[in-house]
Image 1 (cartoon, rainbow, N blue to C red):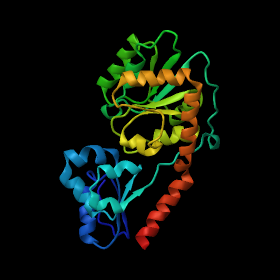
Image 2 (cartoon, rainbow, N blue to C red; image 1 turned 180 degrees about the horizontal axis):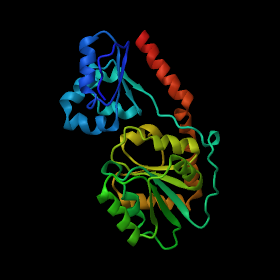
Image 3 (cartoon, one colour; image 1 turned 90 degrees about the vertical axis):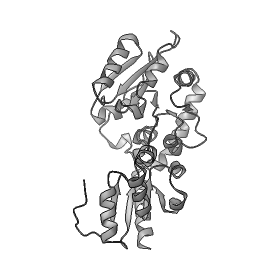
Image 4 (cartoon, rainbow, N blue to C red; image 1 turned 180 degrees about the vertical axis):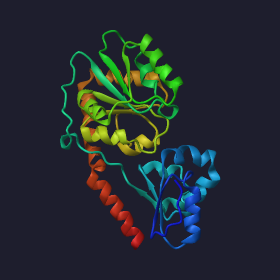
Length: 284
């Protein structure tokens, strides 16, 4: 969507690369009016390298840069670090919705994976990690998300034929995903690229412990000292930490408590206050 030239006191643009033309036009017409740029994961970890000219032009024109986690500064030019304003995505607590919690199974140790099947999500990594687990393991993977294309759908369908622990459930209504947070024992986010995944906010607010790849987008949300990281794209390390979560009650309790502690960052009130603080800065 492009800016149509309508006069505004401030522009809030989403995506440095996709909004580059609108950003340039607004700043040319209104050079002294504030422009806020909300940075996406693809901005930070793809387009800043693949399309540096328009992406960096937008970054340098912006008066404020909204990022979803604190480590985004690692890939942004040092000259704009003072413009960064971290705003965590909020998630509604389950108790305020119509979601009816389900009891967690004692027959299976259920792990949910939430996200469309595509390259950035490293979507099949969890399936690979559970292929050769000991027969005594009760781990079962429930994967929610639409396939990016038929190729990804085929990956998931073929995996189910050879891997009895993996279940791809496709695209489902969001309330079913939220219900899964109440019945699963763990959520895994194996992504290679994230601007700040909302599923981490949702799981934390729901009290569901998370295992995540050690990318900046997840470390920036969960904290440097979080105990549930594994090396990106390493299914052997992932398998090891999943078995530890299944068999070590103290470990999964630690993850749960750490996620609950982070949940305060992901409240609606905190997100609103962060935007209010940003607007106050602009007025000042």
